[in-house]
Structures are given as structure tokens and as C-alpha cells.
Image (tube, rainbow, N blue to C red; front, side, top):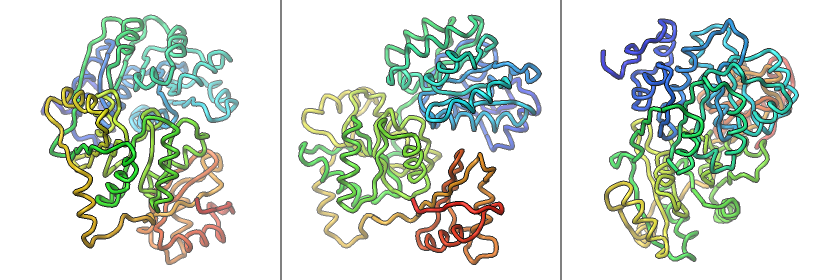
Length: 464
């Protein structure tokens, strides 16, 4: 038995069996270093990037001390975005299968508050949510935190960036001083140390190496003139033709302008920023995750909470002024033993930022010229795919209508000649569902769902 085996931890046989059934082979570095601390009941200040396994670490810890016989809120997890809160809730539910009757409630903005108030009337054991909505429930007195024994601040750096410091402190004031506080952050700005000193008791500090693996991620910096940025971006996309790519901008306005310009160039691109309505944001993320759109233009704040598997490339349209943020950006590709691409555009005035990144990673970065890529483009090669491989269909029914992914798959494939292999990712929301289908069969799939029924009911179906 190795020291990365979950069996080395003092967990119940039921929890260990469930962990094994979820195909957790070995503890990741953040789990290996943090779980013993968490299980001992100590406060923790941990630096770990997205995809490191930190959610499972604090989920296992808070579930370990949960008493399902007490219908009180015993654990509170604060997240910067609704998307991250939903992901965290899903992961806790998976791990909670070992503990029957565990009740978990997600509280986020962008959804009606009345159903949340009704859900809180039957005290959940665990609450996951965003600071603004949690505070709203505290003001309405629909949420009580006086029995919380575990408080988790997930991606605390982003919550501070988004201006949630006052809300966080007000929420923490409603929890017992005897609680255990677990603080996770991808980067380490000064504000993290300050909030830790304020809300934690002698925390154990853990920093997991956040610098990417050079062998897994090909990182190249291209110097351009300011007027050449857009042309350089198009060249990179045309040359490497990534199936999925996130392009990072530093402002919301630039995201939208860049998305609009790429569409003019014939490249399918979606913008993700803070000015989007929640439903529009959901649709953008669904379409990018299910490969209906190959390019996502996003700000750092908007991209937090997104966990896209098999992301082929990251492009920094502008460099971040913070080297840690830069590392966090490119760390989204090259995961799970897959190779990734990370490209950065910079001008002469950005050179101090390049030097700061080199100092942070401890070695010079690779510099290249976009002109070389332009020359190579003149040789015969396929163009960047402007028509995505998948098309998203929207169904006017979701969780509230008891619609499940299996119901949609069955409606598409039962008694039809449409093979299941042509059906992609299915996403279910409260009032809507989205299904990705192969572009070649999109018209056929739309006809099947429009003329047929799902669970014996007719729903409105449209192409997104």
C-alpha cells in the first residue's frame, strides 16, 4: 500500500468502497497533503489549481464528520461562480453516495429565490453557493449557519477579485468560531493571507506546485505589433486548428469585440463575460463543452469554474499582469496525461510581463515569429474548421419536468435509425435541456424530437 492510496486514510469502509467505485485510483498531490490535515480537524490554507482534485479533498473531509441524523446545515462551501458551485455540488453528491440520506442544497444567483427558500425549510446537511445569494438567504433568515462545523472557501482568490470580501466576512460572522475553515486558492495575492489571518486558527499551509509540465504543454510566445494582434490570432487558429480553444482577454468589452471579429473571419467563436444573462452564459458553456463551437473568448473571472475536458489549446490574446494567473490559464490544457498547446501574444511594451513569467517558472520562455506560421500556411493543408462537428438542440423541459439524459437518448435512438454514436453531451438544467448531435444528422435529430415525444410528452425543440 503506497502513501497515495486512499486506504491509508481513516475513512469508513463504505466511503473507501465508494471512492474506488468512482475510479479514484490514487490520491493527487493536493489530496495526499491536505486530507490528513482536514481529517484531523485542522484549518487549512492551500494553493492548488483547477483540476488538481481539491474538490474531492474537502468533500471527503466534510462528509467524514457529517452526522446525517442531525437535520442542520453542518457544512458551507462558498464558490465564486454558479458554474463552480454546480460542479462542487455534483462532486459532493457523488462522494456522498456512501452516506444515505445526505441532503445537499445549492444556492446561487440567477435562479428564483422562492424554491430555494422552500428547500431550506427542510434543513439540508450541506450548502454550496455563491456569496451574494448566501447572504440574501441570511438576510431573509431562511438560512441558519449556527451549526456549521466546516467552512470551505473555494477559489478564494477569484471571490476577492470579484469584490466579495465584505459578503464573505458577513457570512463568516454567522458561523460558529469553533468551526474548521478550509481555504483553497489557485493564486496567492496579498488578500488571501489577510483573510486567512482573520478567519483561520493556526492553519496548516500547503502549496502544490502550480507550474505546468513542459513535456505536456507546448508553450510559445509571439511578439506582435498592437495592430497585428487580431491577424496573429487568426493565423494561430488557422495553423493549429484546435478542436477546442480558450482565448483569454483582460476585459469584457474586448471579449465581445474579439468574438464578433472572429465570426466575420468565418471562425465560430463565443464570448463569455460578466455582462451575460445567466441563461445566455449557460448556453455558451454548453455549446463550447459539447464541441458545438471550437473557440471560447473569456476573461479570467468569467472562466473560473469552467472544467472542460480535453481542452486542446489556450491562447493569451493579452498577457495577464500576474504570472500566477498566466500559469493558471495555461494549466487548463494538457491535463490527464494529454498534450496541450499554450500560445501568448505580446507587444514590446509587454516585455516586463514576459520577464516576470520567466522569473516565476525559473527558465526562459520559447519565442517565435508568427511570420513562420504564415509561410507554412501557404503550403496545402486543411483550413480551420469553421463548421463545428456538433450541433446543439434545445429542449423546453428539464429537471423540473423529470427529464433525464436517458430519456432524451432513448427518444432519439429508440425506433429510429439514428445511432447512439451520433449523440454527444446531454446537459439538463431546471427548465431546459441541451443535446449535442453530430452535424451530419442534426436535421434528422431535430425532426425526431419535434415530431416525437420524450417520456410520453411533447416538448418544443429548437436548434441553438
